[in-house]
Each structure stands twice: as C-alpha cells, then as structure tokens.
Image (cartoon, helix red, strand yellow):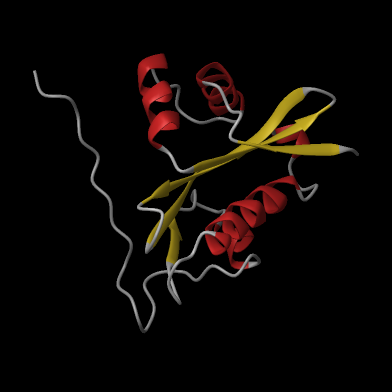
Amino acid sequence: MNIELKENTLTPEEFIRLRVDAGFMEVPYAQAEKALENGLFTVSAYHEEKLIGMGRLVGDGSMYWYIQDVAVLPEYQRKGIGSAIVERLVSHAQGSLTAPWASIGLTARKGKEPFYEKLGFTRLPNDGCGAGMRKGIAASE
C-alpha cells in the first residue's frame, strides 16, 4: 500500500471529517481552525489522494511538546500508518531542539497505551512521574 505523508497541509474541514470518521468527537469549524493555526506541526497520511490519518504537535516548541489528535481511519489501522505519523511528529520535535533535552507527552485513548509504548512512550504514573491529569472546561455564559 502506497501511503504519502504530508506536513502542515491539514485543513479544518479535513481535521473535522477525519476526527468524526475515526470515532472522535466533532468540533466546531472555528475551534478546528484556531487549533490548527496555533499548533506547531501536523502530519497527514493519504492513500490515493484520500486523507486516512493525521497527528498534531502542540506545545511551546522548545521544552514541551504534546502529541494530539492521532487518528487513522479504522479500515487502515494496524498497517503501520499511525506509527509512521507518530514517528514523523517525534522526528520533527527532535530536529527542532535548541537544547539538550525536551519532553514529548500525550494522552492515549483507553486501550491504546500499548501502541505508544511500542514507540518508546512510558505510562504514567511511574517512579519518576505522577499520574497524567487533565481538566475539561466549558465556555462561560
């Protein structure tokens, strides 16, 4: 299967459509547009001109990077596409380092932890770090 990875070409329409088709929550266009504008780097995977996967890097671009929105259409999963996307994201962060170290974090969907462990990520909590945490927020009225 011939898969093409493209960098920084993801549009809000593609982002929204792939999220929904991959089983993620739909987001409003304006939110998707701003998320992509403020992100650091995107990787999109195409098969015969069809968008089949994506991933994004967000963060400060120096010390802390976060992988977000890694999604591959179900019929294309388990073919190495997600791994190629994550590896390209990590490679971009490594190539952008201006200091000896940085951290790349992510929140894995439940059950997907082994996928990321195969790519060198470590579960939290562990002896060096506490549990990852997050807080959802809603717009004020």
